[in-house]
Amino acid sequence: MRFSSLSLIRALALAAACCCATAPRAADLPRTIATVKTSVVGVGSYLKARSPATAFNGTGFVVGDGLSVITNAHVVPELLDAANHETLGVVIARGAEIEFRPATVAGLDRAHDLAHLRIGGAPLPALRLGDSDAVAEGQELAFTGFPLGMVLGLHPATHRALLSAITPIVLPSLSSRTLDARMIAQLQKAPFAIFQLDGTVYPGNSGSPVYDPASGAVLGVINMTFVKGLKENAITHPSGISYAIPANYVRDLLQRKSP
Picture 1 (cartoon, rainbow, N blue to C red):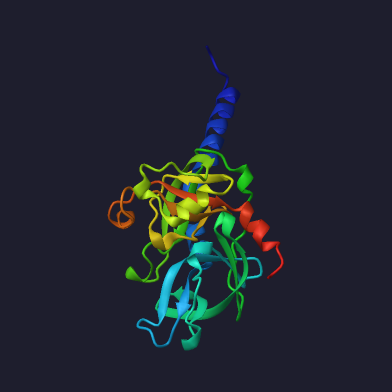
Picture 2 (cartoon, rainbow, N blue to C red):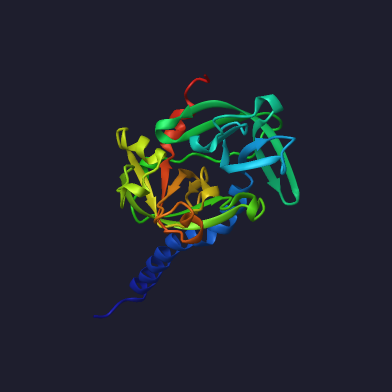
């Protein structure tokens, strides 16, 4: 079969276009990470009499007007030491500079393990919420947070992840010994679709944004990791199977009126 010069040029142009359509996702990730990191915060509490005074519970990220922070509901302390003025808040780490800002709970969605916090001060860079209904299995994602909290210092770390499955949140238990109070409570609720990822998640990653590597649009929120055996194994022997709450539930929470 013979090709004309024009046909050959068209074929080469088409091949180049196909390559360019996939390459930017990997090439854009460093730039996306640099942007996302400015919106990622720690979530915890401050108690002057404690050492260290700041306790880290998990990760959060800024959305909306720059004063709204999204995290997991299980990251927000249920009880604070009011007598000693323990304060809920977020930790903003910018290199060697660490700032603690008090926060209030603007909304809770315990069914989807989400919390909406409000902070004061100057607005922070905010992340855009994407459409989590449009994601597909096999899609490449990334998430940024604080894997082990203050153990490694408050330096946001990024992991790649593949969307392995979109599956009901109810997880199979290998034995009754692996059930905890949180899993039992979840079993009593109606299941909803959750994202199963192949990325390695640690306890401090709870509340981390899961986003599109090219655009930075948030598509989910890290919620939990599958633990093999004892709870401590989440750190010493991570399973590499983790879960994220779809971002459209975040959008629903933000539209609720404050309590």
